[in-house]
Picture 1 (cartoon, rainbow over the protein chains, first blue to last red):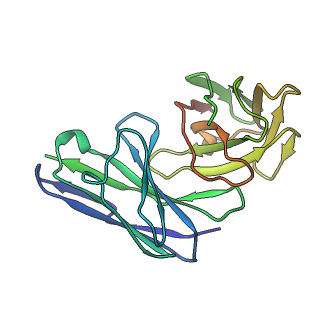
Picture 2 (cartoon, chains in turn yellow, blue):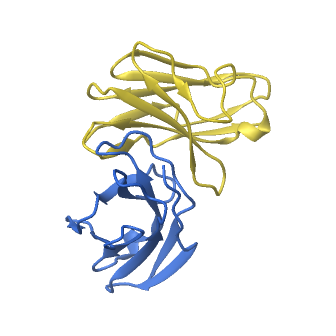
Amino acid sequence: SAVISQKPSRDICQRGTSLTIQCQVDSQVTMMFWYRQQPGQSLTLIATANQGSEATYESGFVIDKFPISRPNLTFSTLTVSNMSPEDSSIYLCSVDRGNAEAFFGQGTRLTVV
Amino acid sequence: DAKTTQPTSMDCAEGRAANLPCNHSTISGNEYVYWYRQIHSQGPQYIIHGLKNNETNEMASLIITEDRKSSTLILPHATLRDTAVYYCIAGGGGATNKLIFGTGTLLAVQP
């Protein structure tokens, strides 16, 4: 299994500000993924973060709004920029160990006021 | 990734088998069927996956129809702790790669 630590676990932010979410994995992984889960909804993939290259964003998500860093094989950050109340969601990171089993962090619960 | 269709919710009595159906009629030949569940306020948890053969592990069994257009996740003896949203995902190609979640089934295990 993989142990994934996300920080912060929750935050309340003012609109117009930015929040950076950290995801730390206990072992090296090739791919890391960032998801958003809006209240009462399923998970939506934001982007795939590979070490040494730019993140690949899904339709509807752009780098200016959700910049991602992947400085090494155990760490990634997702920034939610210029936040609005519509960005209030749970943000989750996930890793793929290459054996068809993905592991998820516990998520960051973001409330924008 | 192929689209999946699941019932919105299901009930199951504690101790009985829970059978969760999933339709993935547009699945392609190299796509796998994955099942994850999400217990309230937690990140999703892997349950099982398969390509075309039935699979069983310590958590559940996965039955895939011969034409691969549908599958059923079976929890043999449901407990209250199995109450969760269960997601069926068709995709990948041997590795998980990115997972595209559908709406899932809320399974409520009743005492």
